[in-house]
Image (cartoon, rainbow, N blue to C red):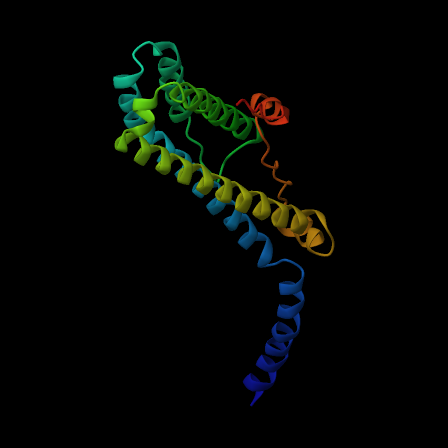
Length: 201
């Protein structure tokens, strides 16, 4: 009987404290951190998919655009730079993230130049292999956009938890996480994006 009476206050205390802890980010902060790591891993996964497609694209274009070696070389070099850098989502630093974004932005720009070049070659545009690869690349770019959007949202949710009361109080006492750097375009990508597209007829 004594055991029951001693155990009851502890059980009651746990029952009272748990909802308070849950509401203060006790579980939500680590869960949000896990979500941001998973979202960044998905961004990397989509970038890898794009990098895997590029050698096939370059080979198809080479057969038709032999005089465009410089552009093809730029694409190959940009791909090599982008794939040389891997990031660990659980340990990424703001500097590593910025360098990773810069490398991927360089590859995006090189691919953009390649697509402009291919407009000069009607035979290439009509080739089924090229059209298939182009469709896959366009799909990959869309997946990258969605993956980055989800990563941006997950960072926003995590940063709100570690910076906005009352969950920030729990973070200060228990976890001591810093706000995560938000995903942004690399400077070169940002400059290119700010230019209005040129339409020619």
